[in-house]
Structure formats: structure tokens, C-alpha cells
Image (cartoon, rainbow, N blue to C red; front, side, top):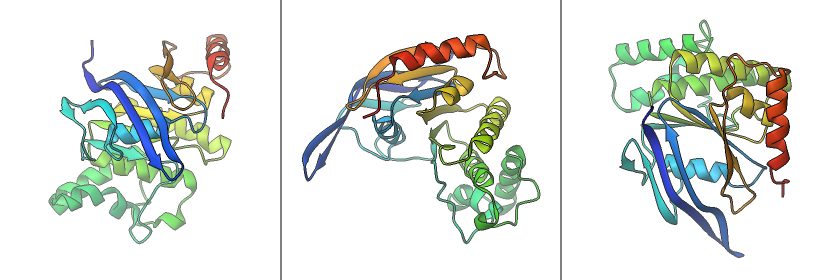
Length: 251
């Protein structure tokens, strides 16, 4: 059995705002296995993004504990990568410049980091676009750059916060297929946030269904459907109906 690479025990998060305290995460206990693709699924604005921000170290927790690879998470680190819905690519850098940025900052030799960056550029299907700038790329291609950049840092865990949410439907399906191919070739532990039920079932080894805010775990599903998955397979549709029935209505 795979070891647990993320261990959250009674993780709690409250924000202090001008309107008073806002309780967002309510005593969440969750283990994520090594090389697992785990999906956090729930209604919009329920606290899923705050959960991965706490796990990645971008937000501090106000209760409980979070460990990644056996170490307490207190701040961001190179062992944790994050891919957002709208990639914060550096517009003045080329595809190669963006992908190699992390290793460059850490002082890696130019030849080594270029070889590593090229490997991940090839992996995400952007061979030939190394010298292109972000504004010359489609939305889907920009997301591929973001994924390649995150992989190039070779993190233990990759957090993906609704990375395909702003793409059109066709591009979104293609990106889901591409992510599966990338993940199967270069296994990483991935925690993926979405409020799209089809996307969750298509991608996940395990789906963790979250409640409305303050969020806690409502139910977990092990997804044993063979890959690649078919959106119109009877088992897929049955699971879609079952999970949809228990999800809280959006606030």
C-alpha cells in the first residue's frame, strides 16, 4: 500500500475580516497517498481552494496540523507546486524561460536545467514552442506551460486549483486527457480542486466530497473505473448521479 505523503489532522482555518471571524475549514482530517490523484469536490466557494492553500503553505492554519513528506507545513516550499485556473506566467519570458524559471532561481547549471525544461515541454506537447511568449499561446497551451513549469521543479506534491475552469468545453476535455497522459508517464501526487462532477470522476483515484462553508468531509469515493474513462459509460453515469445527489447546493 502506498505511503501517505500528505497528512492533515483536524485542519482548521478561520479568517479575521472587517466583518468578524469567518470559519472556512472545519476540523478536516485527510490523508493523501503517494502518487495518488485525489480530487477535492464540492460546491463553489466552499473552502476547497483554502484547503490546498493551507496544504501548500500559502495560508497558515489556525488549528490542527498539516504535514507533507513527514514535515510540518509552515510556508511554501519547492516540494509543493501549485497550478492555478489562470496561470501567472511571466509575460516577458518565453515558454522555455517560464518552465526553467524554478531551477534557474535555485542555481541549477544552465545545461542541466535546459535539458530538464525541454523534457517537460516535450511531455506537455509544446515541442517547437520553446521560444514563444505567453501572449502568442492559446489558453490551453498556457495551461500546459504552467503544468510543465510545476513539473520542472520536481515537487513531491502538485496542487491544481480548478486549472481548466476558464477553458471552453472542448479544450477542457482535451486538457483532462492530456493531464492523464502526463500523470501516467510522470507520476506525482496530485490534489485537484474542481466543482465539475464529470471532471472529478474522469480524473480521480479518489474523490473527497466537501460540504458548504465551513467545509468538512461529507463522503469519500474510491474510483475504480478503468482508464481511459468514458463519460457515457453506464458506471460513470451511475456514479455521477450518486455523487451529485449528496453534494450541498451552492451558497
